Amino acid sequence: MPFGTKTQDYDWRMSIKTGDIIDACDTSNAWYNATVLDVSTQEMEEGHKFKQALIGYRVYNDHGDKFDADGRKFFGWSSQYDEWLSVTNPRIRP
Image (tube, rainbow, N blue to C red; front, side, top):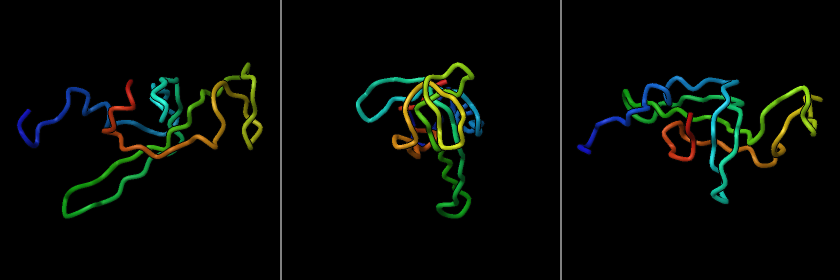
């Protein structure tokens, strides 16, 4: 694709917000349901912003089999495995 073009899911990626449930690929190349725990936008250079999301490889559920530090139940992995990823990273999907 020509330089400066956008992916077909660019609008979705730019609309990612805290609390969204997405699919995320961990560093071992395994895909999981994940929760967006936080979002940060930083300005890199004039007019160019870099948006990233804190990904938790877990989904909160009242029937979860684990508890987080706040006492909420979830299925998945603990906060030890949370990581910041650019919203344009191919390791995240709707």
